[in-house]
Length: 186
Image 1: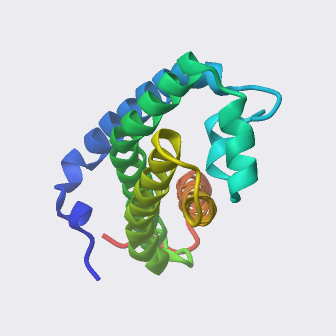
Image 2: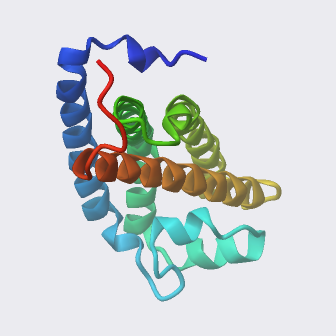
């Protein structure tokens, strides 16, 4: 199925990629600063520990390790993450499409994986949004099932899809740096 990002004119494709990458990195830097108070002995990975808690007692354990200031940071982080979802998912989707173009032009295998992997990046963002909804509900309300479990599984699937997209983007980089397997197709 055609991906909407394929409608970007080839001359502008790199520009969009670099703009989204810059936005992704800038938002990531802000989120790292905002998330610093969330790192505790009970949550050594900060917000990621919370995302992966997976059970009411573990989520309560993490929340109880955060003071009021840390909880405000968590709330901001979870809200700001919705902007991050747009940025990272589009950046990785663009990288996947670029990798597929490189593989196709240079007659490398796996060129057909570009579109499905680009779509899965937006699926990762959707899973991230569902995960955040659950985390926000238990941050501001009672810590009840099934939200910690839902958040955990959404996080695991999200991270898996992001990882696959990044591996494919790296594959595209390798394809672009290594000699052609066959003459380039125009």
